Length: 446
Image 1 (tube, helix red, strand yellow):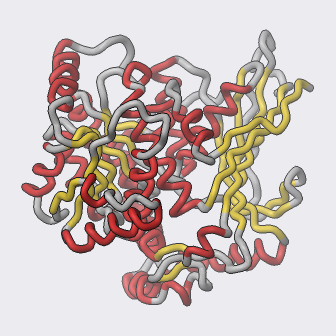
Image 2: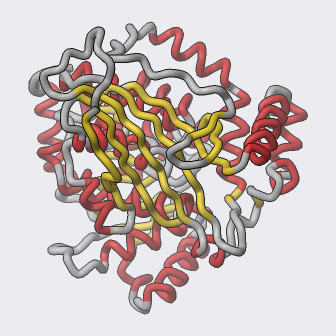
């Protein structure tokens, strides 16, 4: 929707601002005792103590067990050297199966950071409670069906309430989504297409991911037909292709710039970035950018092994018994990359990520019709371990942006991707200050 707020939405937004000023907490971390939630709670505590903060940040943790939440705060206090932390943070007892408790949580805060997944099972009740109680919500879902379904079911309702529901605000998919926007902003001309290449770096202890992410992937790929039906029912007109069409890569391809083989990246980045580009085109009249996502795997041998492992995984998720086996034995079927225990601190400390973006476009004054691209740009987003360091940083800085950059957010609220919500805010600056670094590697006109 273009233009300003309707009278109804303007009124709802004013009431929301007035109400949230009187709430006891600015944000609540829901699911703080979960594996990822504990790291998000720790990151909020770290943000609360930053010297540049000009005002206090009243916040709380929420979950089913007071004892577990207390232990999370005690561990964070010990790690950050803040013995009084536990007494500074509120505790809210809340259960995803109890809608009344979700309402009570939402009424006490301006913003909920929802860390309870898989979101296809547990995400919607939180979104619903937040909207009904005039509370914004940020999640770290990497599940395209959930993210897209929430838009179709709740965008108008959230807009009427003047609240923001922003999905995929962790490693899925802030580096990719904001990385494309950063590349566009740094292009001298019109950016028309971007390919991204994710490289995960590990230390001597290797890599490991908690099996919560594994379960989300199993259920997501097992329900791909539902996502196809949802997209078909939405009946959206295609976003126009500007300039030369981005060529599709083979399932295994070689990136000469990175001297590495790559596979298609099967996460939510493609879905999220494309939704952002649609929003920016339809609402802000910006030129849409074509996008494709890959992950580097090193040698051709590694690429072929991973491709066959992926085919094996995609076969198993089609059947109930296959999904049960994958869930029961994550370490076995993921070749050791996923486990019920998650990574050790040494594994986390030794890991990092780099996303490299190769963009093409047209210099100012050159028509995008019938001409070949004559602008090339390469940018990078680099950061610490993706799942439990970069994700909490991204989520918490998205929260700080939502709380502090109000005039630069889309007017009137709704359900948004990170790029749609934050394209005109200072989120990239905030991430740069916290160790997720955006930079230009090269830029040239051919």
